[in-house]
Image (tube, rainbow, N blue to C red; front, side, top):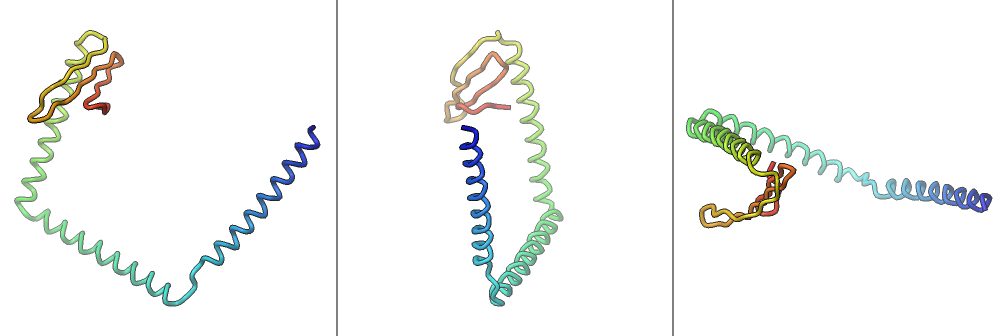
Length: 130
């Protein structure tokens, strides 16, 4: 039995080697060596650099605008408010009995399905809140 296995392993290794050579040949055949292709790739690279420069300049100009700075500050403040409120939510969950709870909460025009698992996990509409 072990001789048969050895022979099968040897055949498998030979097939893998042949496959490796075929893939190497395929890669060589698929390589485009025309000058037109190389010029296109060079033009693409230059165009990408131009786009990046344009975006960088635009962002620099945005940073100089007072309205943009005000919006960024508002976003940072709201992110901090969200973090504080989430912390309060999890502290309140800690005080709850360590058992599964499921209920719905109205948020604006939407209804949010809430699940609290004993392992201190909170799910809103089926997605874990971290």
